[in-house]
Image (cartoon, rainbow, N blue to C red):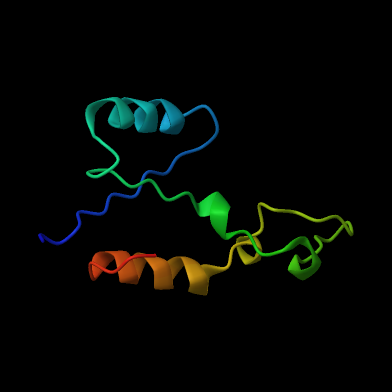
Length: 82
């Protein structure tokens, strides 16, 4: 089995990320394409930090469980299932 090819797609709101992913889905089967969303790695609400105004702010870098995200990416890069 060949090593997976990992591409990161980033951009601001309305920059075309979803459009690009939908186009990739049209061209590749589920066996050939795996889409992982950083949104799936938000920490639980009870672990979220509040911003300087006392509100939950999911745009803070601390909102993402970076360790879990990185661990899963490394597993995938190594050809292991997540």
